Length: 81
Image 1 (cartoon, rainbow, N blue to C red):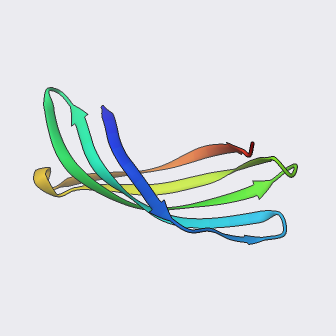
Image 2: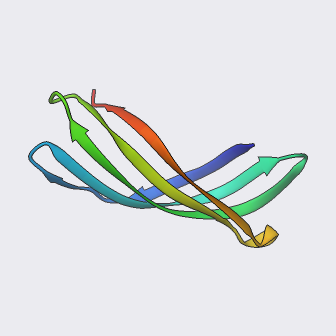
C-alpha cells in the first residue's frame, strides 16, 4: 500500500515536549486500485536533545470511497536540521 498526499497542522511546544495535531489528505494506492483518504492524527514528541525527538504518532485513515478505514500508533523519530 502506498500513500500520496500532504499534511496540514500546527504544533504547540512547551520546553521539551511538542504536541502536534494534523490532518493528511491524499490518495492511497494498493492492489491495483486507488482511493481518496483523509487522516486525522496527532503526534507527541519528547526532545532528548535540542535536535532529536521521539514519540508516538497516532492516526486513523478514513477511506470514503471504500467505506473503510484503519488506525495505527507509530513510533516517530524527528531530527531537526
